[in-house]
Image 1: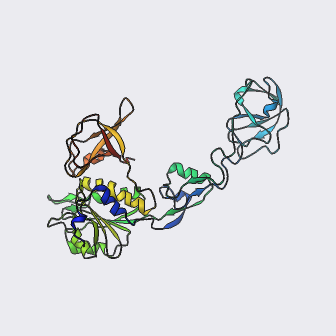
Image 2: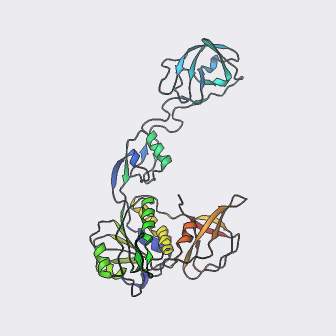
Image 3: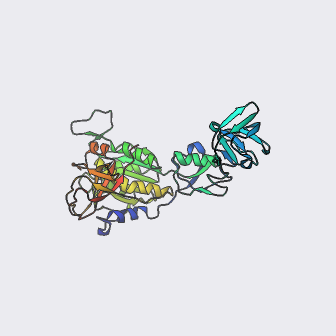
Length: 406
């Protein structure tokens, strides 16, 4: 296990760069369209034909030739065009075809007069649509043309993009393989929810939230049974696990009961990040085992673990699926003053809002203790304070990382 001052107290960006170094898409698999939601595309989606593939009516009405139109002129009704049931011949002079929204516009017709501006009398119809009525026609290829790249490789398939993929006619989609992530919580004080804790124990909560986040971020998470502060037991729990990434919670510091690193050392741990100059989460570390499995070790305090998951785990999972791994921050106006920061970068749990002028605002919670799960449950952003930042006043611009809350 590397133990070098150059791996300690790294800046957040430096630590993230080391964690992401060499991380790339793990593999490709083909899944059915319905199973592609939430997956990352492993190849671009290219349109094989135009959408719509024909000129389509934008309204219910009557399809005619514009050159024949005159207010009050009678046209002979010769047929109907509905979605999936096109009128199959060209429209002749003086003819009108009843047409419905989305239906193919018959050949030679270039005007759809809406039904509200038409009066039908038996087999004829007259129009009162003014001198220059709107065409009300959606041109073929108005959405996309054959050969257009609809989605780039690396795009995340969300519900809206799923509709686009379906409209391209794809029944199967090549996607990145989900990273398999094992989660191991450690600590003598932990008992599972539903158990009866001793007075000196607490319920283990970190693995549940991390598993949910990993699933939301494109990974396949599985929780291992929590282990006590026993290096041999921790190593034995990790040794046989088949995973692309192992995330440990707790035991990450250097106290007598922090045994994760000694346990991982027996499995050939080579660290590239030993500690990070971040608050909360300084003990966070990252490395690889002798067999190549990546290991991200997070602190046991929930806020520390979740903050560092947002900063490091989320971009790592993105990189392992070939997605965009950049962490993007938004500017916001500060609601209440903040004290000067110390030597570590501080990520504060905060609430976002929009003020009367339409500007994004951020209000940091007054208590930022890393053990407070309740505060995190109310936060919808992390507010970044750079190392050595002076006191900030209400109205100052700050950087925020919005959190997904649903």
